[in-house]
Amino acid sequence: MIKDSFRRYLEEAIGSKNALVAFSAFDEPASVAVRANPFKKGVVPQGCEVAWCRHGRLLAERPSFTLDPHFHGGAYYVQDSSSMFVGHVFRTLMKQASVPKNRPVRVLDLCAAPGGKTTDLAASLREMFGDDFLLVSNEVMKQRAGILADNVALWGDPNVVVTSDDPRAFASLTGFFDIIVADVPCSGEGMFRKDEEAQDQWSEDNVALCEARQRRIVADVWPSLATGGLFIYSTCTFNVRENDGNVEWISGELGAECLLREDVAGGSDGVLKTALGYSLVPGLVKGEGQYCSALRKTSEAEYVEVKPRQSRPGRGGREVAVPKGAGELLNRQVHFRMKGDTLTAVPSDLASYVAALEQNLHVIAAGCAVGTVKGNILVPDADLALSLLLNEKAFLSVEVDRQTALAYLHRDAITLPAGTEKGYVLIRHEGLPLGFVKNLGNRCNSLHPQSRRIRMNI
Image (cartoon, rainbow, N blue to C red; front, side, top):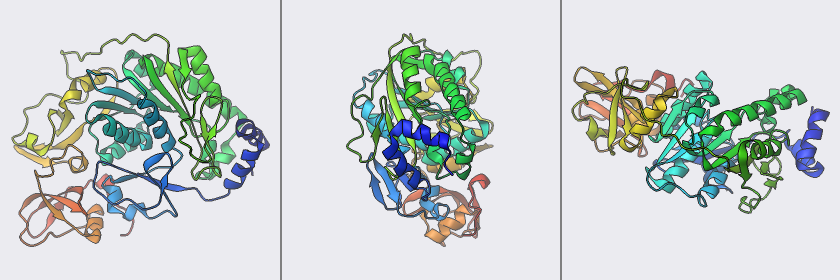
């Protein structure tokens, strides 16, 4: 049952005619879409291309992603097609932006869990800048931050740093970021089809609470954006207060100019232009609800270089004597450190930035976990198999069929072909690395993490 108060809010935001279409669509099943990882081999579920994302596909029905090895190998990410519009705005503005010539582009995804926008941003940045970028992906809620870190590991891009901090923690990084993307917590009107409780929980008081929280979040992180930097603001809601109203507030109170006064929708049918942004509404587009706007910071934020203190190591790990042959496992120059008994690797050109971030933030993942050091032996980590840092020629690899791949992901015992060399073996399915086993000859010990194993009946 649509509340009368929500009906008024929606009609105010998108007009009575469009609201009628949306009300009808709220009773329909939620849409399903995926976005391919352009830097991994793998098979992606087939569907219609998303108008604003060339790697996105709208599916006719929801398959069992759990039973698809390519999903577990990071070949694609399941993401609402409307949510992909934020990545479209990012790519459009980056084509026009002035980027630094002497250092990596520095980007913050502020409210990042579970990882849809982070993985989209990572792919876009890699396509535009190659290795020359740093993406900080933050989630304040600890449990959600763990999910975010896991999804980043599956995606495999070593230029992503995962943090878990309140937005106010970033204020100490004055002028550090060139771009900030903030998909802020909202009243969730755009999730009505995915979450049956969302409609029942909606209220005008909650909208007001979200509006105030969103302003606090943006104000707290604002000092960390460089003057002239881009700020992409998005919600999964429709109402004016949390959307255009907050964009107007950011512009007037914090110092910025709105950049979405011209058309950036790319001729996409159904995307509504609001006064200061864009609104995607179920029934008008084949996705769920999303709002997006963008601003350029005009207020002053003099960059203060953040250097790691030499007196103590960062939280992320200590310097280490590198085990023999470790560098040969990777395809890029890296900086090795120990995190507990795990050898980790951060791309060398990002290592100083990561160390500096660790002085100010709670970094929970950076670069790639390479392996566990046991005496003089390095046991390869599952994340290494999924990382773009992996030197695929460094390990013997075995191609397995779908059923064997699922058995491996279920952590069942698998047997490799007779004659396979003993030792650590990379398991592949249709060319896509999935993880490692230790081949003992007559059997294998699985190195697939218990936390990631398939729990359903395969």
